[in-house]
Length: 261
Picture (tube, rainbow, N blue to C red):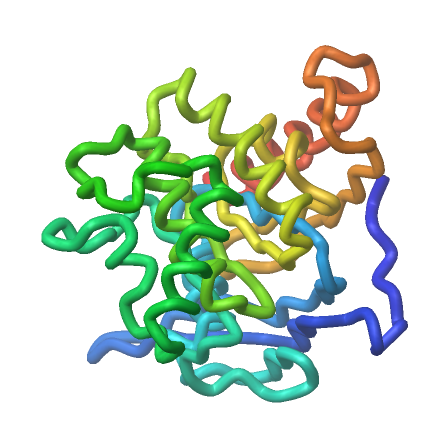
């Protein structure tokens, strides 16, 4: 079940190539990430899991260009990532919508098309996340799940090459999270956008992902990469789903045990 990296360059959108990252203080230097390697295919959904504090979010910030001091190469469409860019969208655990703007105004913020085109785009992307009719609502008037869908629409409307999700469903209650996993699956399938998601929820990772990257810690390294070839939409109660979940859980437990040593 471990993935084999492909060498088909025309299908690779993101290449994490021998990436390492250190943090320096007055007293010592801490290696947070050590020689991480994997490739992401165009249109793939990748989940990254690992022990708390292992460097998952640091890796995501490097891909986003929010952290720039690293060794190795992060290549997006063949170009080294050295700063943030519109070719990457980022979704955080909280929606970060501006509370004084309507949902329509949040989505339109920063767009430079004429007003008619912007209005059409907003309606198109709200429809993609099942928020038709909520253009004039304010974030406080939406549920947590609806607000997060609006945040995803705000990222997608700028048509990024890759969408980076940092525990986007972590703040939701269990039932809303379950439903939002299904909504996120639909959004990904309908938009064919490459997505990389940080999560602590292994079932969520198996449900959504083409591949799952399991990270070790101290420092962060790739422990294992699992390919999940099950068709979408996935049946969480199937024997095959449970087999993959069990394999990933076993690898994750080993990573946690290693972290505890």
